[in-house]
Image (cartoon, rainbow, N blue to C red; front, side):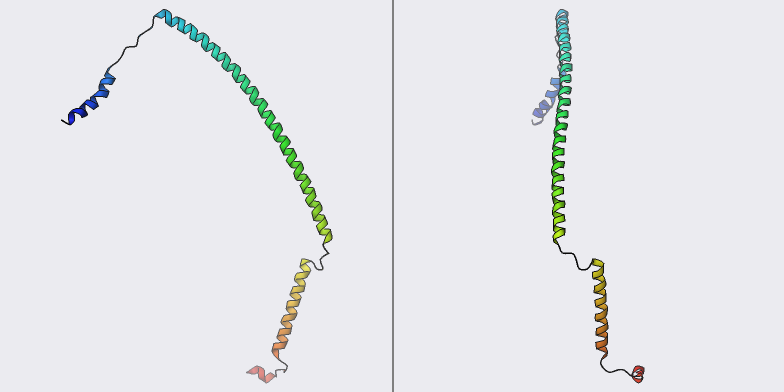
Length: 142
């Protein structure tokens, strides 16, 4: 009982595909009129397509030229601003350097003085740690 609706559902697509309707063919005179009209419409559409392609290419060329010109102007303006800022910063640097007092020692001289001070401190600590009395030879043997 349950299989019957299932079989009917499976058979419906087969029945629908089995029907092969034959297309009606229009008379030959109508086909020729339609072909002539479609040919003229087709050639008209091709001509309009070629014109619109030429217009599109002309507009694209003009647009790219305008955008390139606009980009060049923007780039030149940005370069000009950056040059002005660079000159202003150089001037500020020179002013700041002229206001600073000259350094007493260069970096190399500072390291040399630091090394000399360390050597003197080590010598003094060694002398102080030795003590005030001098060691005699017999103390060295032990």
